[in-house]
Length: 210
Image 1: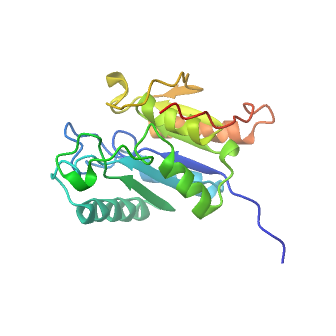
Image 2: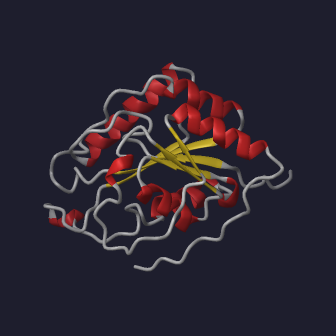
Image 3: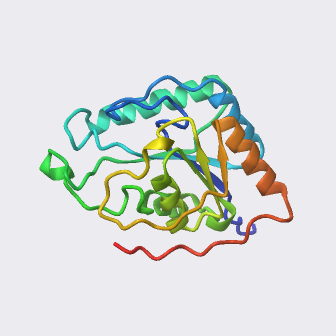
């Protein structure tokens, strides 16, 4: 048997991209209309769909890790009911100023750092230059850039007007390759990019300046 080639993936932020965002980032809101069908279309085109989400509410004592996992399982069920499939979900419960000491970490998994994406790369054998990061904040795209994703799309359906999250990391100069009003519009751009022989040049991972 031959060795299978690394697979391409679409990395998705959760709150503000797949589900409606909340002001305290505590709990998944309602599934955006068309999100499940959009994810199903990406599945059908051979993309892995991987969710990468910061969940600092855990470190603030608002949610437990088990409650976040329950939310993510519920999200996967909703997407599945609509014909789609999420291949993996990674979440970061840490925050440098978390109220709970065990989560008060300047970790590598909290976006804009690339830890969750790189973990997925290793565990799922993902070809990062052929993969895309879709998020509603520039810090999502910074994480994608640092991880070496070949395509960065800003989804203007969540907190895209709020700028960077609070982070010790200096800003990484990132310009989205596209902006989209919804996950469906962003996925259409991903499919076009993936099929085009004129795809954007492969990027190398950016140095982490932290």
